[in-house]
Image (cartoon, rainbow, N blue to C red; front, side):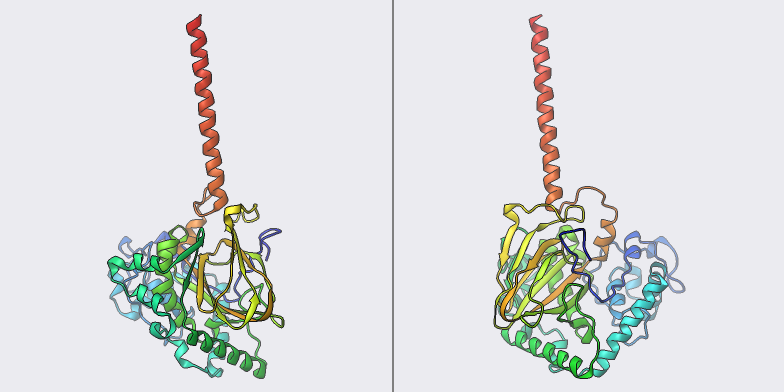
Length: 397
């Protein structure tokens, strides 16, 4: 899908995303039965990150279980400690009020699609499906998050490099984890080929790759977002809802002579994007960045200070705003595979609907505001000069 003529939103995931966006932000979703309809039961604007949500996987739900776990953190304090069944009914009623029958049908079909895969595909490495920080991450990354609360933000900042404004790089994944995930994806693709199972690709621009959420890794990636990426985003990406990331789309993409070769200039369907190279041996494939833009300015010119090219190294991550325009140059030899996690905030998306003018995270909005301010200052100076000149003429008379 084209945003207009130049930059594409080749970022639209094939997986549907159900959210309680309106319910979360206007706070008037009221449950029935055990949850009385009064102001004390309004949903929170921001999630309670310290609350440990229930697991809803064992219930036959019309919405994805992770949506309930995510929405639970928005419940008012007087509902957090009631029974799981009461919370479930309260949240279900909210979701029904703010989702159409078509959305619910689509979500149901996608859950059935996932369940069919998970029921038939035999994982190669089951340990990949449960987040184990000490086995997944390099020591520097893991230790940064192990610092006490007072020093954690500074500890995380210390492992980050910012080679361009709003683009951060850091060492993240152990070589063994990268190799295992590569093998797992190859095993999944082999199963797809042998069974002739038709799978959904990660997005509208990539013809190769796999959605990790679809074959059992959704819970693991959700924990990765909640326990690590959201904390990074709270430090560096507050302006795009980094503090309230509550859903994700996790996938791998593949590049090479017999795969996708390059990726056109685009923005992601995310508030924050994590991109980690897994390997293997390859040349080319650099990411190129060209500034953060809102929908209105997505095709405006690039300024010199916004130009940055990033060379991939296995295990090294790059994290940026989803609206940071970028693309991937051609992989000229070998085979490259990357893990991507698009992190989204339902609160930020709802708030954006009500922002009509200046967006403080858009590079061009900032320039236009600065230009208007400069014009205003110049006009005021001219007005004062003219006023002083008139006053001088009056005195002479």
